[in-house]
Amino acid sequence: MNTLHLRFFSCESIPPGVGGSISVSASNSDGSSSVSNFFSYLPPSILAVVPAAVSQVLATLTVRGSNFGIYDSTLSASVLQNSAVLAAPGIKYVSDTQVELLLKPNSGSSLTVVVTVGNQMATYVNAFSYRAPSVSSLLPGSQGTTGGSTLTIFGADFGISDLSSRVNIGDTTSSHTVLVSDSSLLAIVPAGRGLGKAIRVSIANLIGSSLALFSYFAPSISSVAPGNNPTSGLTTMTLFGTNFAGHMETPTVTLGITRCSSEWVSATSILCRVSSLLVEDIMSSLMLRANLFP
Image 1: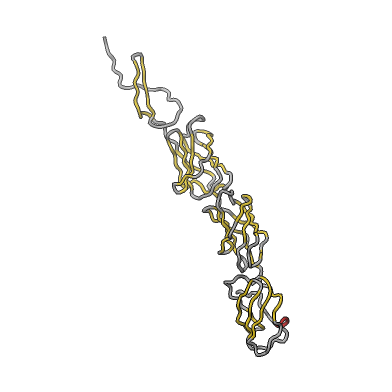
Image 2: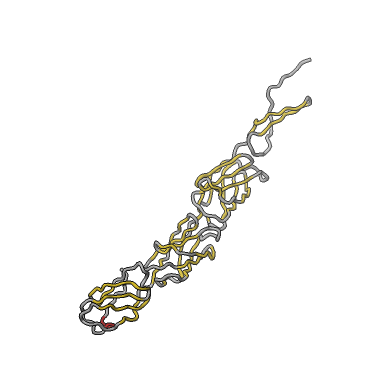
């Protein structure tokens, strides 16, 4: 009786599959045996992710690479920002070389994409970013210096209500904002002064750009009391009007070509201590600069 000892065998056709460290078993008429951690399929690999920037509301990423398995493979994906996991995207199998990620509304930049096929993962760093918000127009474009009124801001990529939003007019932050849609939001105008203030919208950690500028109304004088003063001066008169800005301001007032010592009282009144000069008709000879607050 001759005994034949086989030290190897071959498998002529490996079935499609995914995963690593797969157990392999062999059997014959005398029984069967198995070997653990014997075989692995090639792990998935990501070569490209497009587009590089997406909307904060709804977006689809195309992930191209290799070894994404077959249509019924166990697939999952995640998006990371500085190792923090964002809302998990949906994943759609296209082919062994392509999958699509259905992103949830979110925010962030330089994000990492991880695709898991079976028990093997592929990672792609700095894969994409959500687009930063942009401002295109304002309604109205000018308001009073006292603030408190509502400004409507139009643009794109303002996200959803779950994302924190912040609006700056110049260097001052609005006390309250309300997101209306991905393309418009409302902001309470803070007190201020000046022209050509840049509007900056920030959504989560994304700081947007602005093509629109905001201006505060220029100060306007409606009356002066008293209307006549002695030529000796040394008299205090009150200027009444609108848009005299806030209590932190130091107004500049001139009578003719002479500057008087002034004190801010409110957004509608300023005190001016008159020096020695002749004031014949205060309403006609007063030359009060439009730029009370240079």
